[in-house]
Image (cartoon, rainbow, N blue to C red; front, side, top):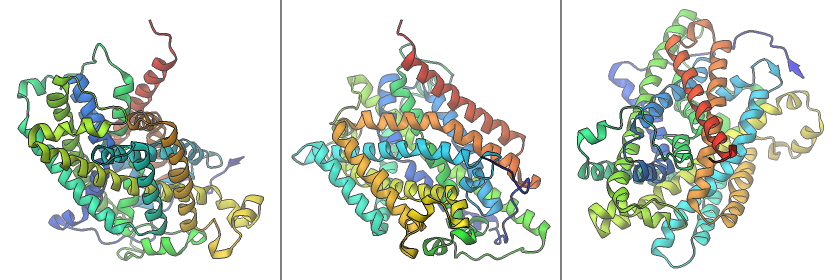
Length: 484
């Protein structure tokens, strides 16, 4: 069925809050910091040391290129939400063509990415426990997963998440200091700035790293959520047919400022775009610094010994990153950081994926809920406020199933955290081009002309999508092409 749009563009948000001025903008860079802390996951702690150990600094140029693309991508993902007060997923649902085709093509691959990603993160944390406690990694991995599911479904994880953020900050600082202690010569480091490709390139090592540098494919979208819930431009505007208690709690930010003055609205939105640009830059620069630090540690400490972190004892291999500098204290410090910081990433990812899947389900079922008919509506809407079609219940359902039960089965089937996380990173790398190019299409077709991206951002987004598309295509070809 093809849906015909009643209008060419999505209207501006109803009201625009007063944008901060000058130094007051610094107080609004929180979403960039939160995004940076969430990015200190396996892409930094696991895959960067692996790449550094195997290839040294040959791929430093690739890291810098992806960091630039990531800045453009998260900034442009948040543009639609800031201008309209609606999520980028909601924007994708307005594209012409078969009903909600863009949502379906995001939804289905992300179900796999979520299950595999949560399984891998839990397995990495379980590996850290098995280094200092007796028992197999799989037992600790399952216990971590179960604990995180209970915390996220009940909403009782705020304090633990706060602690994990502090540990992530500590891990970042220690990683940067440690990298400074073994810092190579500038000539050695500079040799990696020239684009080059290793003769013995193993895409199974490189592809997951590229797919998880700073954020996976869905993590790119989450930046727009964080800026909205922080109140950029006035926060999210809830659709009347989707309003519920949880959504009300998130959008109680003051909707003040220019309501009737259209020129005032445009000016305020442009100011908020400037604030968002700074927050995005802070996130990618800080996260890029940490990833560079782990790349240096892998090249200087693991590479000379021929150690590539892998297998069920991956955390044991990673302890050498700090113990080689700080001794036994460093060994336990990185284990604690992995447990708390990456354990916090499990919580954050369960919450983020659960929220995103709930939003996508509500978008996909919007017509049935509006008409109050259809077998799916009759089945899911039973129970009134306790129905599955309530956002909060949908979120819990996806946390329990997609980021709970299925990851538990994956952990039982594959007892290698690196293998599981590699699959997650590869899915992210392959799915990113679609998300990026679809978001660009939304911003070009559905935003008012005054707030569409300029030529620079159009070109950068197109290049980012093309980069991931080519990279993913080459990797797929390497899997199916006969070896020479």
